[in-house]
Length: 447
Image (cartoon, rainbow, N blue to C red; front, side, top):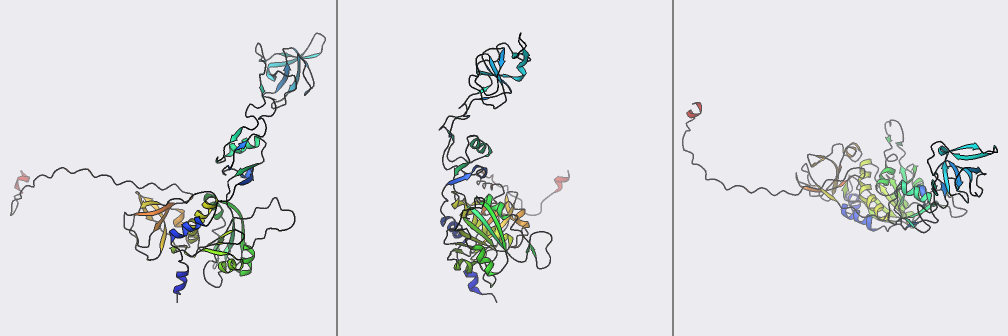
């Protein structure tokens, strides 16, 4: 016999309320420095300035010889000050020695001897008259930037070229806006991570996908921890195990901002989410949502500031809960905004389901959103082929009616509904001809 209070316990928030609450409970993570190798895709929190001239020394743009004055030149040791009519070998990027006025390319010079048989450098090969001109083939100091010049402005979303520029400037870290680090607690002793599952087993669907989805939603995917179904394992995994004494491990991940768990959010004796959160002194912020699939989703906050998002154990239900609660939560922590919900015209009539919002993956067909097949809570086939998710209100939807919807994090934006076109004005109706009463004579058609 089904216990009525349990369904009510899982329906504490409507879909809209849960989504808004997940966004409102979190504050943006403060900015901080990150290594430049981890900064691609992050947003600069402050301007990046040149800490010295770029380049900070004059260098050669060619392989050849640094020269002073006109030739022929007496050869000198590399790096020494050059007197007039002296030259020394140099490579591309090499430091221009004191006294050098230009660089003669290796193709434009040749080593020969003077009247006394001593080696000298003379023009030759492809040399042109007057070569090299004063300053030719020298990269001057501060050609790219002077010390204190702004290289990148705050608000820039960093791409690989920005990172290369920062490295060229000699920077090791960049000050970026905060972004939530997410760790994963994957549970279930029946879960196998490879091969074909046997009876009583299920293949892991969370490990391969959750990190990527979190990245698409604006988080940083951290480490994954797999535990069994005992309460002791749950409690130990949720505890903050950062070392309190001794030197910090510079290679270790920083503390997580969000922990995402899978399974264990129901009300049976093997579901430990709520008990573990309570023992750790945490607070339940969202305890069930009036939606399906995904109604057992739970969001909590621990005393150390970490948020814990409990996803249901069924894969499609977990994804719907992640979109509903995880997306807004990560957006708030990462200085984002709560995305607006779009609308699509529904391609089917969907009956009412009083008290519950239904999230339905759909395909766009002829401009209409048609509910996908294979969209039960434990299935992924429907979502894999979907263009988005309809948010069907409890009162249902009529065929052709606009219904709230959102795009998938990995998909294209949903097209805006076409505005209703003004119908052309009809021409005045002509007076109808009188139709004779009685039988009609069709003989004229055979003439």
